[in-house]
Length: 458
Image (cartoon, rainbow, N blue to C red; front, side):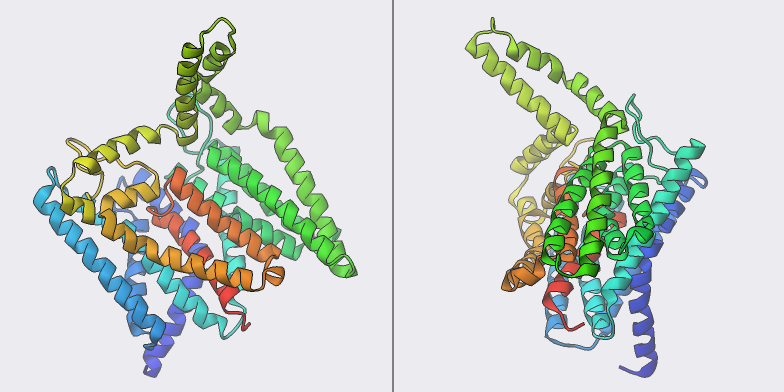
């Protein structure tokens, strides 16, 4: 690699690390494009997919080794299958909208490219310095930008409403409520980790202020995802820092650090639970329960005069209502897409039905990422798509258990929780793997966890 190419490569690597901070700025530019200029093809689309293209070029440019050969082979094979699926849908799908199909393919391809790009970059930079700290700081800064926007939007009453119904909540000045909610939920564990890492005494508890700001921001959106993220991560953090305190109880400095953080974490968790009944998500849950009639169904179930047969029927209705509350109606779209898939020709079963399935009038996604990706690119495409996740998961779990005593620490547990939470949101609520604004955070965190456990040279 000549000097000029090496210089560009090095600068691009650091740009990708800095690119994390730019994410909320890009999202604000997207809102500006849509609401001010009324442009659907936004700045965010051009920037994110432009960077994706540059990552592809970067992967081609870096020196050839075993891992790069495997990555290039995978990307070529995956791209080939996506093209076959696109051509097949052009022939068998009616109606067929080329722009929607290409946009869908680009969104699906974004995650593997981002994943491998950051894997090469972080692995390479890790040989030079502790790149993990830089990534932690950049995610922390990014979430502070999001929190400040959410808080200012709340104070000025200028936030975009999360719901068109009587439900409460707003998404700040960000265009996509589900996406900004998923971003905050996934990155919350990183903000908690950063706060605790820098809170070494009562004098430095101000590092917990951004944690509280992000909690407020997640509650302001009014979704179950945000609330669940805060509760789960605070409980996990409380547990792992209790373990860390016990582990380092004979070290006066570390014992003091974890004692302070345990008290602060406990106080924040208790306050969070006490305020729950007054949050938008509690209001929205009550509305949703009334919509599906769960309260009345429970009263009917408790009625002693009901026969066993009628009680069984009510119980079935109640289970469906609970599913509706948890999935927000996505189960209906899932059933529709399962029908599309069952009726699709073999070629579409293997290579996918494209965007929205074999719809008649308008394409609708399930909004549960794994299902949307499976129905879009078929059995073969999905097997290839999920392969890198399974490989990295296998490596992470294997190296974790090689030295579980050392690896069971607050960094691995919290970053692991963030990854698992992100994949869980992708499975249930969507808008993670198929949303480039969100998937970049998940991709970075997966690679971060992988490099932390597998490469311990720094």
